[in-house]
Image (cartoon, rainbow, N blue to C red; front, side, top):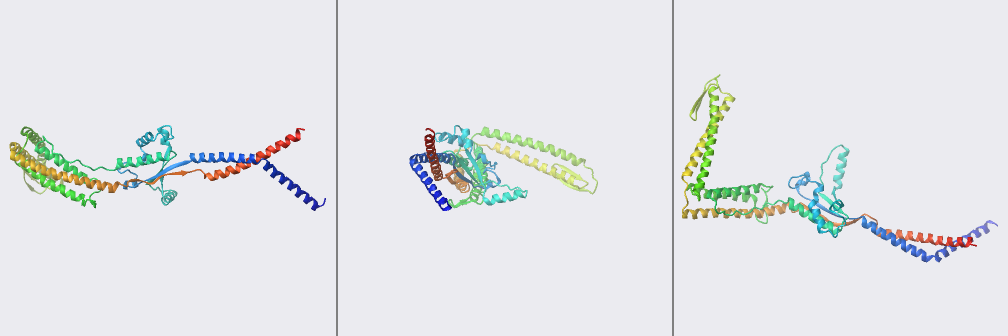
Length: 439
């Protein structure tokens, strides 16, 4: 057999084998199709389950208030990432969304929720470069991604409650209650209560950086309210005080007298204490030995003191002695004033009652008008400064960490087809083997 005949023989033999393969495949075509369909369905279902298991819902929240840059909450306490979702919020959502939650208990539910700080690329690069140089950069992320494999609606409810809880906890409330005319109180007590309320208003004005804030909506500022408060205290309130004090008016003469006695006694005790200190200083001055030129100090109180030397120590003694004697004189004047006021206590006449009632009503009316305006501008100020201190910048979205479903479909078709072909040839081989060795 020459080479041409041999090549022709092999080509015919190959053609016969190829046709045999095709006939075998066509013979078992249903087996191949069924195998392909079964494997494709199984692989696709498996891919779907895999993707479902690896599907994560996430949302992004952002903190926007000055203190976050220093790692603190709006109230100055330490900002901790793990506290973004408080336990009470987790408990509430777990109870309200119980039917949709996959977790068995609150502990598992808590572990299923992850909080991750988002660091911008530029900042991350600076941090890495600083670490390479051995430097430390303090950075607190302002954006955080909250992720969970729980239902999308569950995570949405959780994020909403987190934002609401943070605002309720850290959004300041500067609201003040109006002042009510308290019945049964004496005039001096009412005066003290109004003064206390005015002090509270002043403290409220100083709480936060309000000095330069002007409400465009209301048309006035905190500074303007401060002027109104000072005017009320100096004019209306002082007028009310002067009227009942100068006339010695009281609705309870006995109790008023007892209070005066208490104040007088307290001032007398303080005077005696000061006199004791003054005596000690006088003894020190008398015992001081002159060592230099003569100087004469004028009479101090009831005492005349001469000194021979001027130095810092001696000057301090004199200054202390002068100061204490002045305080003694002040106490004596205060005691005399209180005694005169006590002796001048009178029950008000009907006309005096009407006059003082009018003065008091005018003071309280102006005070409550200021409180009302202060509450309005406080609300405007808080909304302007703290409305965006936390917000959702990316709503809940699903992130599939698996593979695309068409890829599983294609893999299923390929694997199913290969399995079908393999089964077809195995069945044909088994048939030929049986025919050959069964004879």
